[in-house]
Image (cartoon, rainbow, N blue to C red; front, side):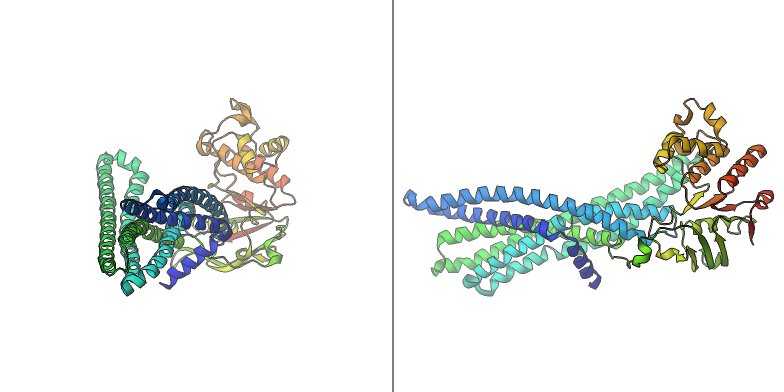
Length: 538
C-alpha cells in the first residue's frame, strides 16, 4: 500500500498542473452542467404540468438552454485542453523515462533484456499517458460532485445522505482487486504462451527437419486458445462487476428516493423538488459508470510504473557529466565477471592501455577474450572491480560519452540492409564521401565495390547477407574506423580472410592507427607479435 501511494504521488508530480488545470475545470464544469441540465429539465417539466403562466417558466427554459449549451462547450474544451496537455506530458514523460533508463544500462541479459526494457518504456509510457483522463479525472470529478450533493441532502434525510460515499467507493474497490487478480493470471498465461511461441520460432528448422512442425503448431494453437479463453473470462468478469456496480447504484438511488418521500409528506420538500432530486441523483450516478474502468486503468498504471524507471537516478558530478573523453588511458582494476553464479569467466583481471599503444589479447577459446571486449565497450557491467577511462569509472559516465571514445568491430555489429553509402550516412553522417573511400580502401574493399552492380549504392540485404563473411567483416572494420574514436577494438579481424588480404589489411590498419590506441583480440600469434604488448588470458 505504501508503494502504491508513492507511485500515485510520483505520477501526480509528473502532471503538468498549469496545463491540466483549465482542462480539469472544463471537465468538472461539463459534468456539473449535465447534472444541472437534468435538474432544470425536471423542474421545467414538473412545473409545466401544473399549467402555470408561461412567464413563470422563463427562468427554467433559460437555465435548460444555458446548461445544454454549457455542457457541450465545456465538454469540447475539456477534450481539447486535456488531450493537448496529455500529449505534451507524453513527450516529456518519454524523454524523462529514456534519460532515467540510461542509469539501468547495460543490462546483464544483453539485447533480450534491453528489448524488454524498450517495450516497457514504449507501452508503459502509453499507459502512464492515460493516468489523468482515465485514472484520475473520473473518480475525482464524481467525488467533487458527490460531496455537494451529500451536503444538500443532509438537511432532508440526515446521515443517510452519506450513502452516496460508500456507493462511490464500492464502484472502485471491487473492480480494482478483480483487475489485480486478473492481471496476475494474464501475466502467467502470456508468459507461458510467449515461451511456447519462442520455442517454436527458434526451433522451426529442427522441427521441419524432424517433420514435427504441425504437432508443435498444434501445441501453440492450443496455448493461444487457452489465452483467448482467459481473456474472454476476464472480460466477462469485468462485465459482472460493472453490472454489480450498476445494481448497487440503483439500489442506493431507490433507497434515497424512499427516504425523500416522507419529506414530501411533511412539506419539507415539494413534489417538484422531489422530481428534481430524482433526475439530479440519476445524473450524478451516471458519473459513477466510469469508475470500474478507472479502477482497472489504475491497476494497469501501477503495473506499468513498476516496469519503467520512474525514480530519478543519482545526479552525476558536474565535472563528469559533460566531460569529453580523450581516451588517453584505459585501465581495469581487479575486474571479475560471470554469466552464471559460481562459474567465473574473468577473475581479478587488471591491465592498462596508454594512448597510442597497440595491444593484443590472446588465449584459448572460453578464456573470456570477447567477454572482455563487451566489458570494455560497456555492453555489460563488471561484477566487481572497476574499469576507468581517463581515470573516470565507467559507472559514473553518462550514456553516450563512451561510444564517442571507443569504437568496436565485432561479430555482433549490425549492418543495415541499405547500401554501403547509406550505412556510412546512418552511423557517421559527418564523414564525407572521399573519407568513406579512404576507410574502404584501408579495409581492402576496392575490388568488392568494383564488382557490385551499383557500387557503393548497391543494397546489401538484411545484415549484409549479400556479402561473404570476410567482406562483411572488413566492412564492419571500415565503419569502426570511420568513428574517429581514440580507442579502436577489433575482434578477430583477420580470421577467415585470405592470407594476402589479411596481411594488407593489418598493414593498412596499423599504419592508420599510429596515434590511436588499438586493442586486438586474436588467435593469430604472428599478428599478436606485431603489437606493442600481448596479454594472455588463461
